Image 1 (spheres, rainbow, N blue to C red):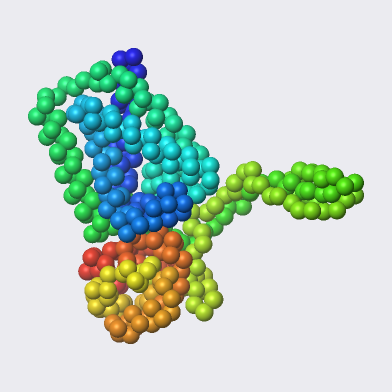
Image 2 (image 1 turned 90 degrees about the vertical axis):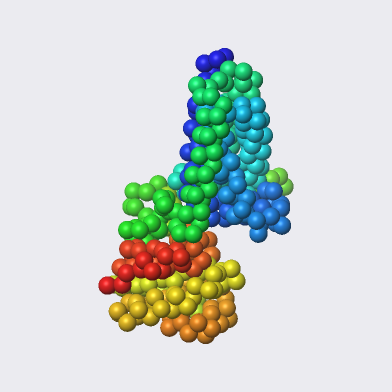
Length: 365
């Protein structure tokens, strides 16, 4: 039992630190995932959506601290109880989400590792078993550190987490795991290789034959049946390849200009996924930056999921010398964790990406 507890302690502690740090690197992205859980019928708590960012920061810091406390052996009873309650809650959450197909990615490891709902549930079951072992054998969780040392190590971890969270919130994630990272080419990210696996579907055809229902299952071909066709149920039994970048469009008046704009040698994108939530005080600085870009031969566009009335009002209020295009909100949130944020591209390759607090770092050649 002692060795099982020792293994579980190291495995769970390290995993919680890694999982928490990945989400701490991008708390805004994790808050978007929490909003999905709050609004899509998993938790059915829409009133919590405005607090998603604060909750995400608390959860990820607490997750890292629990991992640290478990490894150093600090407040063992509190730590093990907290781990148990947390994993029971998340096991229920991932099972509900997987069974009812509510949220397709749990966000457990941010954008670094994508898990399907059932993979996430399996991961939580393994963790639940290991944490139950820790709960049963908590008397075997000792420490080589003294009481003061354990307090200091935990306090240092807390301070570092707070400082790191403050940095990424006011700038951008230090490590960018998304397909829109610097030096990524958007067009190449949308390509599907010729040898990529194709989706496989199963078709259950329902007929009425001699006054009785008959179901015939095929891989796609229409069955030869002497009867009345009623309906067909399609089931995906094997997922096909999905490129890292999909559903990317730059639309105006219903026309997609993405292909043409991604060929521009000098392109600046001002991205504001929702103008109702955007940091309006920064648009005076954005005007200065974009005017400089225009003077140096750059094409400048705005990209937002807001309606035409809202974008035109923003352009008028700040005298912006560029027009906005429509892009899906989820896509814009994925591109940059800043509202607004600015990208500089060359033929679809991202050369610069900055938070609105870092506009002074933009360099136009």
